[in-house]
Image (cartoon, rainbow, N blue to C red; front, top):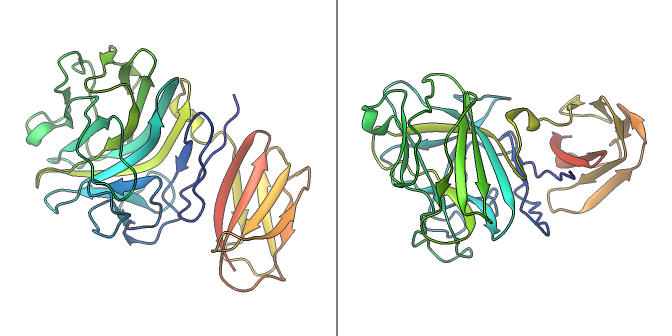
Length: 302
């Protein structure tokens, strides 16, 4: 299956024929308000492009990989939404890593049709209210107010990162969760026939949830699909030569400046190639690396 990944790019918002494919490890955001750093992927209930600062917070206090994650804290008037592209057919997997401290609650709901930026959400709820330790009264339990949903067989750990796999069959209008190797029975969509997004609403002071390593793709995936291609770059910051470490041959390297302009490109066709960035001005760049059918993007500083 061909996969094209989007790595948290505020300036590079790619949309595909069948799906908006997302891979986001949160390492490319500035700390603090999410705001307008990636408005085609992360928005909020007001859906005003981030102007109201009621979406996610980018933090470095917890992370399942790298140094950063996203925080949806309780009792701050926040109402963040992950946009999934208003899918009307096909089946999709959404995987993310969750961290919920002891005594705290996690929450999400599955949204149907989401409005365009500039139009506030009115709420199209294809799931019920899904709680992880609702009101700190069910410490390891998960519940869903959708009457067709049964999450009673699922549990989660506090104070450690755990993976959540949400599988959605839009054609059948069903969804299920897999946590800790246990999969819930299929539940039926409630409001419409669209997979629009995920609302991570912290509706009470007891809410506190961290999110990292988000992967959204078509078909049924497993948690180990997040890092399909092992890839690292060094040094970062780079002076002249950027080393790209891979296990497979790299077909293409494209370097973009902060305005989205292509400033450097190479087709090495080798494992672990290098690229000379010595002629580029100081600043931030997005280095897009293609290995086979997978494209990943890494932010580097020069």
